[in-house]
Image (cartoon, rainbow, N blue to C red; front, side, top):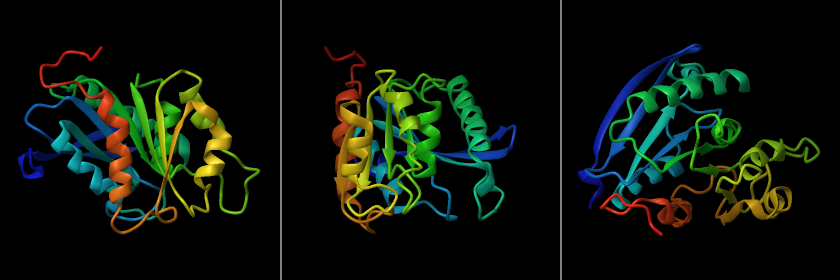
Amino acid sequence: MSQAAARQSIKEIDTPVGMARAHFWAPPHPGGTLVMGHGAGGSSWSPDLLALTSLTEQGWLVVLVEQPWRVAGRKVATPPAQLDVAWLAVMAALTCARGGLGRPWVVGGRSAGARVAVRTAAAVRADAVLALSFPLHPPGKPEKSRAGEAALVTDAGTPLAVIQGEKDPFGNPEQIRNALGRGAQVVAARGTHSFTKNPTDVLAAASAFLSPLRLPPDGRQRR
């Protein structure tokens, strides 16, 4: 299947903190759903998130979610609690109108979006979580660890993959492994917190994590 075969659409979703926007890349016969959120800066999609849209070729329905603050044109992200509220509202809307948005239901995001995903994974009954550039701590402040947020996923026994830049100032792959233990699958990628302009290694790592989760074309669970 070529990526051109994927049907693209956009849906606006009202949340308690403003209007969010969901961008869909839907293959003809989805074998699972991947929903990803963006980071705390920028007004356009990062190369790594855009790269994930090619997972439609493997049967994944890919949804990229814009938080209300970005839809409204603001440059600074809202506080974490408001990000979670908006994300939960979007997930509820997608669940109610799921149709082709079937399980496995994988959620995730990059940077701040990854934090939102791990904090809310249990609430949205995620089957797995994909975190890109998880900000383990603020740059230069390793004592302010956010490992406890990711532990909400691993402690629940939910599969978690963290794809981390080799030189990420928010925590390199080794620091992530030490903080999260064996409960998470940690993969090193080229670059820093933003990876590289051509993040083919990020896509490959995401594909390797997701492939065993995806339903085959006949819709039956693998044994």
